[in-house]
Length: 422
Ligand code: ATP
Image 1 (tube, rainbow, N blue to C red):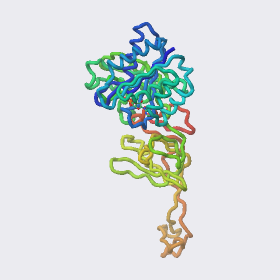
Image 2 (image 1 turned 120 degrees about the vertical axis):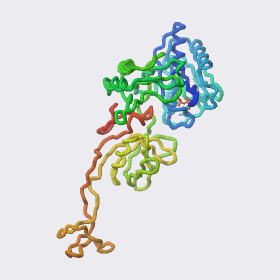
Image 3 (image 1 turned 90 degrees about the vertical axis):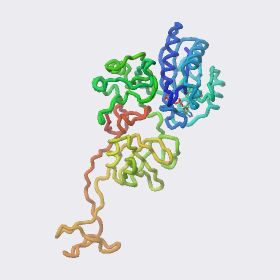
Image 4 (image 1 turned 180 degrees about the horizontal axis):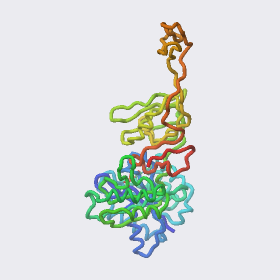
């Protein structure tokens, strides 16, 4: 077996997509008589500053020789990659051997690439040390993702699928013609094996990108047959080609278990704490609140595009015990999901007079409350039950705001009840 790793071939403005390049390489190998066993779409650390969009890297598992694989991939990158964009720096790595038997150092590199920051030099040194064939275009930064894609099959244990359909090249850059009703119908027929196709709360189709690249739509799910069935049920402009990718999307691979004191910018965490400051909606509709313990606090934010998720966040009360998940930047955790671990069910309030029913007044600092009219008193505040709309368990952003690598609650495996967004 031979593994081909490819990354950093596309441009935000000019389009293209590394999945399209990988599909083209796979097709060219097939034309030369080789078999392609699978193509992996690996989402690396979404906090990496160089990413174009979703920080994707691709791997092709084939029985072609290293030489044939290297020639096919490097010619395809020469032909198709958007290297005229300053920010596009393709990398190619070709490894001999079974994807299940990659050297341990490459497996570790792949794991680190999803939740940490790595360097080109580290990737080059490691690829040379283990004897992989490599090539970089321009500054060659893509080697980081390319080497990650090589180690991914052994590094990760949880896989999902995406059926990606591509447009006819003559239509690239024009509006996509996809019938939304057919998308909803197909998505409903296979939910929840297939997820994040549509947002049922806003009525939006989320499987159709708005960027200028070659993708028509991508159908994500736990099961490749279901993804393909949904893709085939959609009515649209002609599909030029399609491929099912095996991926680490929807797995939360980027989240580290962290503590409030260990938090650093540029990493994504799961953090336990208490709500210390009440949710507050600020300019732009973003909702902020503070989470912490006796020592530290971190601001958390639910951004405006998370829409109805902000109402769940607004329901939080000071004192609720929570787990918050998301990437930290500028000291603020950008919420992807949270769990309620313990709900506050009462709040301290000024007592009412048992005689007249009116709210008592303060009797002076540390002297409790009294009712002047009835001459009644109370030593302090009393606990009043509060109505809570939230329940214990996990809440998440809706499909329209989901990051590629974030795990939808509907996939299961969470340590508590879940309240999935559809
Ligand atoms: P698209 O999703 O549209 O395919 P992209 O978001 O994948 O684009 P790339 O063009 O691949 O963006 O750019 C990401 C760059 O970051 C690549 O050069 C890749 O090698 C590099 N990279 C990936 N993971 C890491 C990491 N953990 N640390 C440092 N650099 C990384």
